[in-house]
Each structure stands twice: as structure tokens, then as C-alpha cells.
Image 1 (cartoon, rainbow, N blue to C red):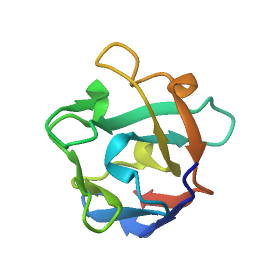
Image 2: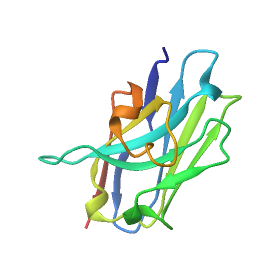
Image 3: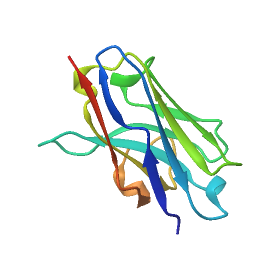
Image 4: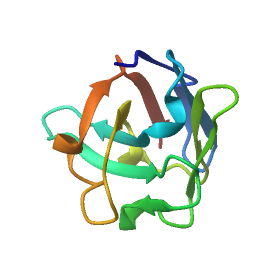
Length: 125
């Protein structure tokens, strides 16, 4: 089991940037794939990005490719989501999650067994 705590959310103007962080407890952080998901009001939770345990492989949903970058520092038990060129449609609560997955399954919420409490991101037009 791993406990996850997100931080870094906030309010920015469209076109601005934010960096989300997700700190994890436990000594096996590097064993897990890590994902970021988001949920806007009235919508289902959707996949944003994921990264393999060693950080070699990354996956993104099409709408954030070229704007968002996921990375991790296993020595600090932390995963990051750098978000640039934010758009109003990026507004949502962002969640990090830990689990086991592959290129075909990292976009599925069911691949993750631990979730953070979420952090609000608002990109104002």
C-alpha cells in the first residue's frame, strides 16, 4: 500500500503553467507505475498521463500531448505533472494514482489501486 498526496494546484490564466506534485509514502515507490487523472464537474474521471516505474516510458492522452509532461524522482518518492499552455478545458480536479499497468492499460482507472485526494486546477479564460 502507498499513500499519495497531491499539491501544486491553483488558479491560472489560460496560457499559463502549473506543476503538480504527488508525494508517496512507502519504500517501494519505484515498483509502481504512476498515473495522473482528472475529473471535471459532471464528467467522468479521465486519463491524463502515466509513467513507468523506472521513468523510461510515458503515456499521454491526445489532448495534452505537447503541453503536459509527466516525470518522477524515485529518490524523493514523487511524481510530477508539468502543465504548460493551460486551456479552460483543462479545468478539473487532478488525481495521482499508483498501480501496475502497461502501455495498453495505463489509461484505465482500474489499473490503479491507490489514489490521492485530488488537487483543483482552474485555467481561467
